[in-house]
Amino acid sequence: SQVYLNGAFMAPQDAHISPLDRGFLFADGIYEVIPAYNGVLFRFEEHLVRLERSLAETAIANPHSRDQWRQLCEQLIQRNGGGNLSIYLQVTRGATEKRDHAFPNPPVPPTVFMMTGNIAVPAADSPDTATGSKAITLDDIRWARCDIKSVSLLPNSLLRQQAVAAGASEAILLRDGFVTEGSASNVFIVAESTVITPPKSHAILGGITRDLVVELCHRHHIPVEEREITESQLRQADEIWVTSSTREIVPIIQLNNSAVGIGTPGPVWKTVARHYVSFKR
Ligand code: PDD
Image 1 (spheres, rainbow, N blue to C red):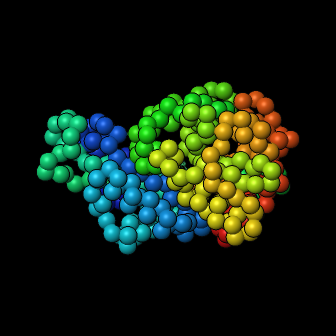
Image 2: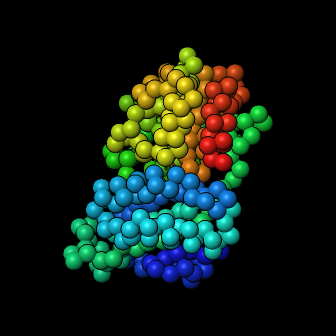
Image 3: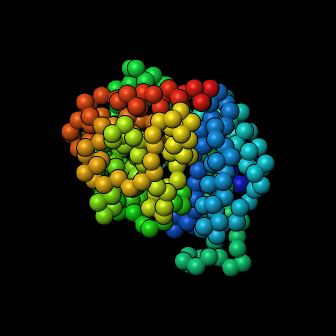
């Protein structure tokens, strides 16, 4: 496999960065995860817009134009054999000479790193045989700017690990009694035949998959609302789903060891999963 670092493609073992990189010292960087199906980037514009926003919000210089980003991503896919891949793309504030919390002055060039990962076959690809996943609820211990796709993922990592240790695949996070999102996903519920997901705010990442699911519901006249979800609404939901670029739409069949609805992937999930899969093709 090949990765990209600061202007060149290379084998992963040849990619080296300085321990004085601010990404290493301060987790001072942002990232994107972009899927490609059959070698073709999916929702690339949307991911680029979010990348630009993360860079702007953190005042990290954007080293590339949109065309350049696209070319780099396409080359990386080609060099890794095409097919179904995800691109991990990270930009940090760069390598400094001394450890100082304030930004380097004059600025140093940002560090750009990209690699590919495999995409597991998503549950949405086989709505009739999908078995669903388990989730647990945990307190959202993260900072107040979760809308920035920052590489400072220690809380997300601790939360996900707690879920895995409890035999679940995702942690659904609660802040002041309201659902925010998953440790690496957005959350949807179905209640009274309506699809509900929390509104975008500083408390959640504006997921590209989330936006597409909302769009597909509108397009197919499935009632959908972007509004707050309380803890008790989550517990009483007929269906719970989590969404992300690498896992698409995953039905949650158990929450804190209690069945969600009748304990199998629900009918609304199956319908939306089918729409998602046809949109992908
Ligand atoms: N995570 N919320 C959080 C905290 C996330 O980390 C992610 C994605 C999402 C879903 O966003 P999208 O649909 O744009 O992938 C929501 C990526 C996949 C990751 O960290 O690997």
